[in-house]
Length: 187
Image (cartoon, rainbow, N blue to C red):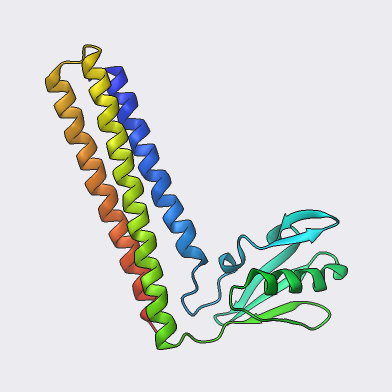
C-alpha cells in the first residue's frame, strides 16, 4: 500500500484513539456511587497566587468505597482546598477536621442514577461523532490522494480499512458505555 495511504490510516486511527481516551477520561469523572480520586480531577486551587491542580498540592486517597480523603502537603491549604471543592459545584461536601479533608460519597438515588446514565450515553454519542469525523477526514484525504494519482482500487481498499476502523472503535465506545451504565446501576 502507498506510504501516503498508510500515513492517512495511522492518523485516522490516532484520531479515533484520542476520541476513545477522551471518553474514558470524561466517564472517570462521573461518580458511580463509589469513591474515586478521579472525581476531583479538574479542581484547581489557588496555590500562592497560581491556579494549581488539587492533585499537585495534596495526596488524594480512598480509604473505603464511600470516602475520599485529601491530605494537603501544607496545613494552611486546608481552607483553600475546601473552598475550591465547594466552588467546583460537583455535589460533594468536604469536611475539614484540621488535619485532612474528608468527603463522604452519598449513595446514588434512582433519579440520580438515571440522570448519570443519560450523561454517559450522551458522552458516548459525542465520542461516536468524533470517530465519524475522523472517518470523514480520512475519506477526504483519500480523495485528495486519488486526485494526485492514487489508483482507484487502492483508494477503495483504504476506504474499506477506514470503515473497519470506524466500526471497531464504535464497538469499543458501546462496550465502555455499557460497562459504565452497569457500574452506575449497580447498587
